[in-house]
Amino acid sequence: MKIIEAIDYKTMCKMAADYIITKVCENPRLKLGLATGGTPLGIYNTLIADHKKNGTSYQWVTTFNLDEYVGLTGDDPSSYRHYMNHNLFNQIDIPLSQTNIPHGDVQDLEQECIRYENLISEHRGIDLQILGIGNNGHIGFNEPGTSFNSKTHVVELTSSTREANSRFFNSVEEVPTRAITMGIGTIMKSREILLLVSGESKSNALHALLNGKVDESFPASVLKTHPKVTVFADKEAVACLKVFR
Ligand code: GLP
Figure 1: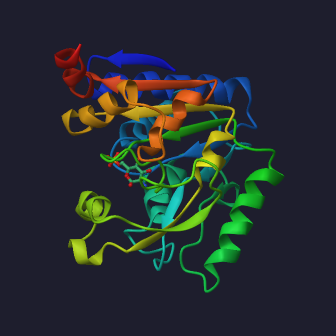
Figure 2: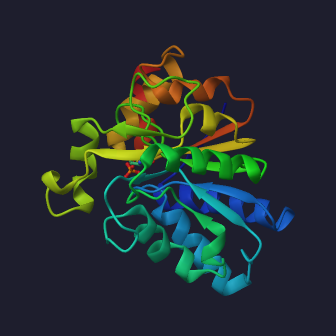
């Protein structure tokens, strides 16, 4: 696992965005795995600015998002589909038909998980997966205790995750209790992974990742067993490491 420290959040996003842009230029048919939450927003803004200024094209790129809340339709402002359309897809030239996010509003959730897992396989897997990290080490919505071999599945969200994500809703009660997420096994099949860690609130998670053992109680620890992971961390996230060092 390679660690890249950035002086601040903006620089971290620029470095990660430049990396993605290079990959898209090298392979215009890149299969790109995307994340939601607050952390990737700066990256998406940088990709949009670059698309407008330099014309980097996403016309042939296919995307797969990590997760979606159960019970929200794609036009619900709190859904991850809405987040992605609003914060990235509608501002670059990617056809929406090439953007994939689990459907959280279907009757048969188990079937949807199988469909999504198969869809990724049919595209011969993800070339580059972007990940954020939850305070408890979750990746996607894979909460502590999730099997490292898991495929796309339905999860019960922990109260700490619902609390952390309540800022995107009117109240914590409105945060859905379940989500569909790529499994840890699904994520690990990606050929390359970028993990973004920003802010003081994530410094404990970064410390646990770098210094803890590989264990299902801390989902992100599995990344230490992947051959090609780069961690982009900003100064605030790294601060606590300096204290521990
Ligand atoms: C959610 C998403 C994760 C994301 C995490 C951290 O739980 N499902 O994919 O990594 O939030 O989000 P943030 O970047 O807002 O801290």
